[in-house]
Length: 255
Ligand code: NAP
Image 1 (cartoon, helix red, strand yellow):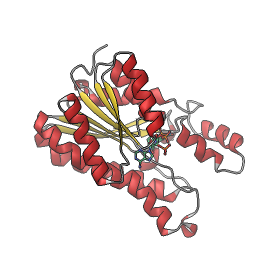
Image 2 (cartoon, rainbow, N blue to C red):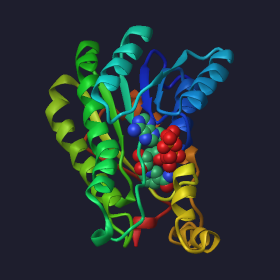
Image 3 (cartoon, rainbow, N blue to C red):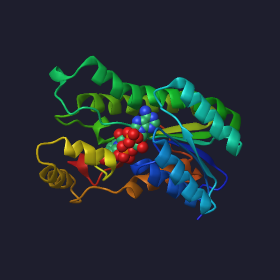
Image 4 (spheres, helix red, strand yellow):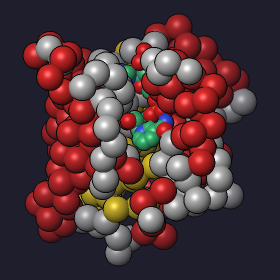
């Protein structure tokens, strides 16, 4: 299993959920991986556990909405492992579950700062390393809610729509540098983000069951369902794939 042999990747929000699964599957496929997150205790523990198994991995504190921290962490990964080939822009937050007319400016801005500006900062500081390496793969976690919407969490849906088009712009801008950019659009995946979101509803267990049935396959996905998509887009198997939308949603958007 060496689909990513010789590649170096950075994964934002790599401590939990989809990011953690992406880190683990990429390591198993031969990549060296930098985990970037704000959950320092959990991130350090994950990096130590994986490192003890012999994998080339390390943790960096990095709030993706802070450009200084982003530059320092991305440069740190490239310095530690010799280059940077792959950036997984995974860190994201759901934000408050309120209708548009009840949202404050601060609540709106926080979601955009992490989900949109974070992708901008990380991409901005990864590109020089990828240009130096002669190629690269940018993998941006959008959502089914970058393709369709739902009557809840307005700042989140706006942010994921933005990520979808930022990806296409960067695909066009950096194609001459052999840097590819693709978005992934997961359906509901059982992670702490979804768990907390469903807990914000009146009846979380009913909401969980109702959410599962929104997917024609009849259930929510698991983090590995998305991580394998990340491995594909990080690998040379996808060398002719750029500006594309990889939908992994149990059929949610096929209706
Ligand atoms: P998660 O379980 O909440 O994990 C996200 C990780 O990112 C957490 O460790 C989180 O830390 C971290 N993070 C939050 N803000 C950060 C920041 N400013 N800088 C760096 N790290 C930060 O989320 P997930 O469900 O795995 O989702 C991962 C990505 O997939 C997100 O972009 C999400 O929008 C997208 N997605 C998820 C689903 C789904 O159903 N799960 C569906 C579609 C798209 P904290 O715990 O402290 O916040």
